[in-house]
Length: 214
Image (tube, one colour):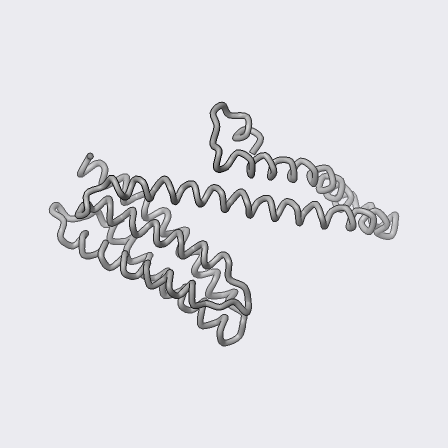
């Protein structure tokens, strides 16, 4: 974060949140270092946890400040990237595979943001609606890949398969929230599949750019 903030140039949508996050991290860092040493050296055995109790009142609000700053920074970064890719989408031909690929990626990232906002008793309807949009975009992408000549790289068809699997895990998350309020296992699978989809997307874009350079 320090290296990023020190870079030349201005990113108005993100700079203020980045500076806020860096300040919060710098504020909490000395406490974390002191507590790490305290734990590593087992000093709590010598003072009966006196230092830990003293630090607790200081550490908790500082960690909460970091969490809020990190969330605000992530939101600013996400909104900037979405706006950038929406501009790119408009510039692409309607029938271009790259447009279908980007459209699917956009709807997927919006669904992930809905997922990140879920809590044990959340209304899952907005998340399910977002998954429905992903499903439609992914179906259109699969149709586009099927009609391409030469055929799309296997990493591209693998991307559509991974996205389909992610939709299924997302619906499991919604089911678990409604049924028990504990979506921990399905949420883990959703996250893991999303990470795999990011790798598949990168491979698809790289391989397709070699076969069909713009």
